[in-house]
Length: 112
Image 1 (cartoon, rainbow, N blue to C red):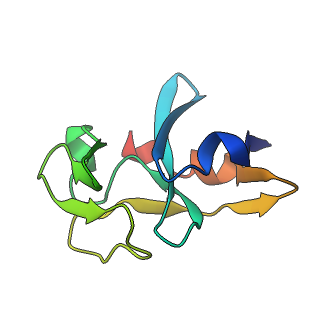
Image 2: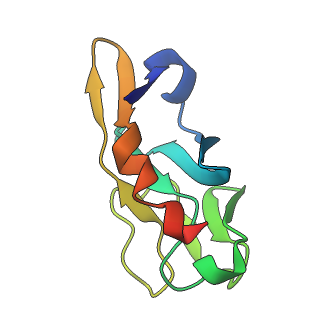
């Protein structure tokens, strides 16, 4: 019911992309560390560009949409909704693990 990732694996200031499989579909998501050292999870999609199924990539110190080229600074605490914005996934940190519930990831199946 949960995906548990060691903090040492994902808390390094980088973006880490993952795929969760459900009913033959791949639900892509990523975890990032912001400039204050806080971790958060997002679907590798947004409500604007998800139909193209291209997701995001990292480029220099930005996250960049592969469809519309919108850029988001990796160090920014909050990514403003600029039309194309990564969709957050509820997560928590517990006992040196970054945890996301499977049911919260599965809510994004329609995006993929």
